Image (cartoon, rainbow, N blue to C red; front, side, top):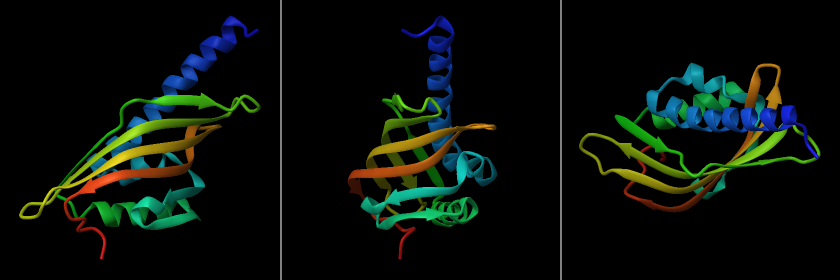
Length: 151
């Protein structure tokens, strides 16, 4: 049986994790790469295999630079992150996974709209600075349009 304090902590953690995942999407859309960097552990494990980037551990700044370079070619971006499901590691209350849907729109004047749809698994850990993303797995269900950010 859990105490009231443990249940409240779980609710606060769940809200903080969902805010972290939403901030991931908002920082991309805002092009706020400094804020984006604060969301990750160092290193961070990225698995964007479905989009052509094989799974690997990256130094945080290297991944943020990669994301900024690839996404800054678009005039506008909109990443929508709904349907958050947070699953806590029962053996370690400082670890969780937030599964959410992904609807990513990318617009370039004079070019087609590029859409990605799918889901993310954000593996998060509690740090002295709050919850951080330690691993992301991107699941692309389908795309529409041309991705001008890849060669």
